[in-house]
Length: 260
Length: 260
DNA sequence: AATCAGAACTCCTCTAGTCGAGTAGTCGCC
DNA sequence: GGCGACTACTCGACTAGAGGAGTTCTGATT
Image 1 (tube, chains in turn cyan, yellow, red, blue):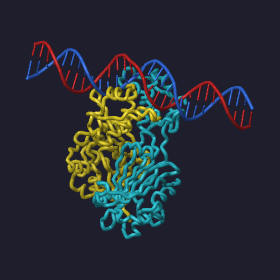
Image 2 (image 1 turned 120 degrees about the horizontal axis):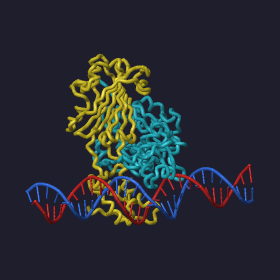
Image 3 (image 1 turned 90 degrees about the vertical axis):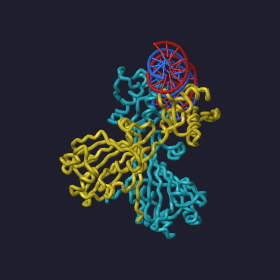
Image 4 (image 1 turned 45 degrees about the vertical axis):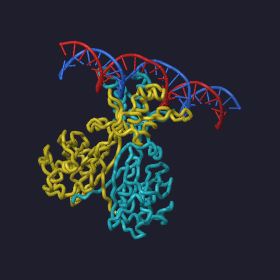
């Protein structure tokens, strides 16, 4: 733990706390402070730089907001170690996977050696919101079945998802029950005659809302993927909209684009 | 500007500055503080809540790190107004677009009514890094042509991109010149006989590095998309890797996934 | 040897101020 | 009318403290 940090540049007009953050950031990026390593304590940094506590805290705050460190009350500040990421391939909703009998999330997680679980399953019925109605080609009068749940890997939450389906299709079916059975929602839809053709996915990245940060136990400085997927049948009808929020450091998304 | 904020809850064990941030966040999310509106000044908030200046600043800092507000020195703190987003469709690299003679970025931006521009074009040649070599199926000995540039819309930077191509393919061609000509790199590759088949895209979201934040003039609390695209020819050869960093609030990415 | 109490160390919240610097409006002078 | 000085207001950086609460180590006691 004998990290060597440069001194401050009194000539520079860069604020002291930013200079300090620069030094630490540089040490992290060059591996002198490895993932999981302990960043010098506030007291140590105060002494080394000869500054007040609040100045040290500003520097540490900056690094934390950049997602480089996490502070643990009573223990110290540590360099973030990125958790193993899960790769979402573009063929993840292919029929051949669906027919093997498990939901996409379960299969993928087990294949990569993790223990998948799902909790907070809630099913309600409500009027369609404007956005969902538009995506499903419905009007505001139409009823919607709403299925929300949270996905975890090894007990660690990574994703929340809310599916919206026309009540006319899904109400009273197994889709409206907590356990949708082998292959999940999409397998049930196909059994019911809605042959799926393709999905449209729309991806945004942003900082999480407060509830999202809580639900996914996100460290400060972790953005989320906000993904909205619409499922289309072979006759061009939208039958499901799935709105998911994913911890950005648990996922890499992968897609294949045609060049022709 | 007669925003009404609740008082503090002395019973709560939630820190004062977080309670204040909650109030302001709630006002922003419910539109009582509209995008572009001025958040009450530090002095006003000090008086309203009866707290010290640093406490007010902690609350404002929190909102800023969540990407909800921007502070302007000497003017005030304002609710962030999201810039118009550009949607990247999954067919954006289809041959029919390429053959119309302009690069994908230019066409799309003009279609959505913006003025596209490209700057900071730099072309170098170097040894392949391990990651790029692997993606291109080369060894560390192979030379790589590196094309980096920055894309702007209406003078506002939105994306930086670095393309890596085997020097054996691209060196000495128009791809190694600042202006790659109509249709861009991909059109040149196809002219040279490399018929493109598909692209693999890999998407991560994270907080920007310092240089990225500077190059894209990102407001604090804005994550970036980090997208790595590999171009494959019809015979399965990787001919280009493009590493791009995009301001997350300038883009929505859209993809189509097969269900079969 | 095991356990418990305390000390030492960590980060967290908050106060009460100082000085600095950018912005914008007012008001008087030319 | 135009221009500059002044002033009030804004956020930015920093100091020097306080008490609190969670963690870890250590040493004494059983």
